[in-house]
Length: 65
Image (cartoon, rainbow, N blue to C red; front, side, top):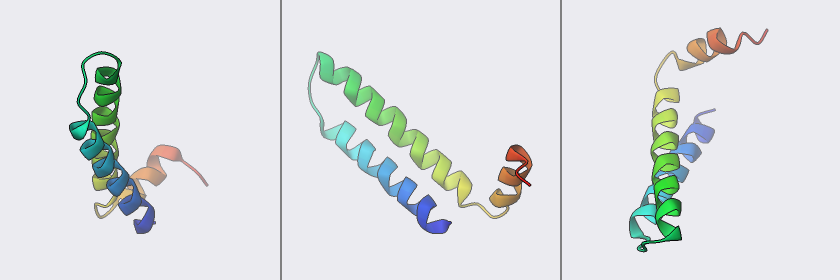
């Protein structure tokens, strides 16, 4: 499971870098904002999932049994 969380973190970092390097004003502004939002979201989720006890929290939230 840690591999997928690390992959999510790396995708988030790549999206932030691509969003920061893109320069434009019109349509690309919307793309840059989306890349930043998704990048920050992916990084935040992956860091939360890497915390100890996160599997218990996910189990309680999803109630898969």
